[in-house]
Image (cartoon, rainbow over the protein chains, first blue to last red):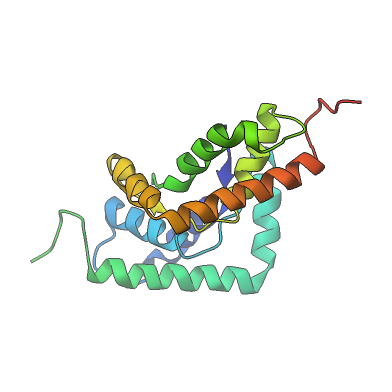
Length: 93
Length: 93
């Protein structure tokens, strides 16, 4: 059974767009994955069955500025938590 | 970036276990995927980064009977909705 949470792509896009503004102490792949997982646990999932409808669902989501703003806020909160509690190996001295 | 929603496996397991008790009008793969997607949109996601921790997270979830009961209830509700609104091609006359 294959289902897709459209929020995964949306949050990945926000992390990529906002990376320079999140003031991260580390931007390694592990820290970005931690931010992604933490953010996805804070925003309501949007699962679909038919992946070809993903662009339509994403577009509908993007025009809903309040939902989008809530998601950006969730990413910013997750970034602050991960930045303060890095689990990656590259802990700069 | 690879993250996993542990709830996907948990809900798949519940659908498989409960299939005979959900009184579905159709049990085709498409209807089961619709039930999976609808259920996952109703239960809080549990995303993790490290897939090797999936069994541990699942086990912690299963012992929390209230969360588990809530998830079974979400699956039952989703099954009722899908049963009444089949989107698969095999609509029996």
